[in-house]
Image (cartoon, rainbow, N blue to C red; front, side, top):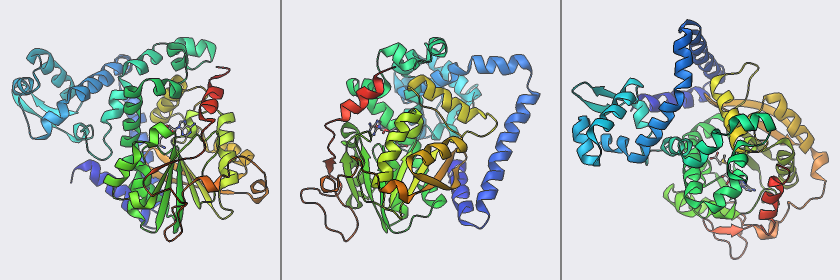
Amino acid sequence: MDSKRTLTGLLTALQRVPGGSALIAGYIGLVRGLGLLRRALVPTEVALLEMIMGSYGAQALAAACRLGVFEHLAGGPRLAAELAGKMGADPGHLGRLLEFLAASGIVRGGHGEAYALTRFGRGLLAGRAGSLKAFAEFNGAAPTLQAWATLDASVMTGRAAFHIAHGEEFFPFTQRHPAFAALFDRAMVGFSEAMGPLFASAYRFGPGTVVDVGGGCGALLAGVLQRQPDLAGVLYDLPEVVAAAPAYLAAAGVAGRVEVVGGSFFDGVPAGYDYYVLKNVLHDWGDDECGVVLGHIARAIKPSGRLLIAEMLRGPRPFPLPAAMDLGMMVLTRGGRERSRAEFERLLQSAGFELRSVVSASAFMSILVAEPVSLHLQQSGPSVIPEQIGVPDIGQEHVPGLVPGHVAHLDHQNTMAGRTGQESGS
Ligand SMILES: C[S@@+](CC[C@H](N)C(=O)[O-])C[C@H]1O[C@@H](n2cnc3c(N)ncnc32)[C@H](O)[C@@H]1O
């Protein structure tokens, strides 16, 4: 077992013991404290150069991932020249890339020694649960870099850098660029595969049904259902995104307990379930769009239900990861942002929810647990379309024509209208 797994196992175990959350918070505080200590001690020029040249590291990782360097090392240590032969690469240039990766701790070796993967290199391997390979490639992809190149114009105008660079918003752009869309979806899978077990340990679902709204290919849902055999799920995302889900869910062994539904959360969400999950969804949108999505969920959720929002919470002091993610949202989306607990509390209140608790699920992910306030459940709205969706509860009858693990379509006639609405005014 490598140390990354040991750490995940440790966090999962800590979540189960009394007072475990406090220990996790202490661990997170220690890591952050060490970061602050390093910042206080490092010479100014060194710190600045590390930041300025930080993009070199991201580019080196993206290129190494695209070239399959880490997969070539997965079978065991290799000399640079041997690896270059395997890959058909230029030995000199590959050697320098490897030297940089070794200096960054992604691999070890060099200076005549064979290169081998460290735990960081293994975290970038294809096909490994929770791999960040696709996210590294997404960050180094041309459309992403072109958006970052317009950051200054974005700061001056308040417009999304992605829109300035590409003339349209992120999600409509992905519709016209399927390879980029697939890369983004894979990046999200990598993020969420690691989170599934942590999520299920941090928040104990009761038996029932959970709808993962904007759940991508189902990586988080699969992880949660694997841990909780008494739960069934609905995966809800745009039709073109959930098209890939049945195969993914089947491979994860949970397809029989998941109804896959395609549609836009701006038009409505599947109605009448116990739990609704929004993981890394609200941070893509401004407060108005979040209000629409939360309003649909408020009208759709069972009165006894729970809404679980998983995001990287911003604290009173800016820490590098949440602050970087926030900047990423500013570049890629119009209105998207990382929010503080107080900001979420306001959003939830105005949509008809009350925040009940906040649980740490990992070093960088919190779960906000909210319950519906009865007043808002009586409001009418377009979100309740029960006859059009599958009912995946174990033991309940399914709507004719909808088979677990198959893709159904919530009326998404207005899906594009919802997205177009998002574009207008930007
Ligand atoms: C940042 S990703 C998060 C995915 C997943 N929840 C996770 O954490 O891995 C945002 C998700 O929202 C979905 N999405 C964007 N617009 C949507 C819409 N109008 N209706 C439903 N889903 C949408 C995207 O397809 C994507 O899967």
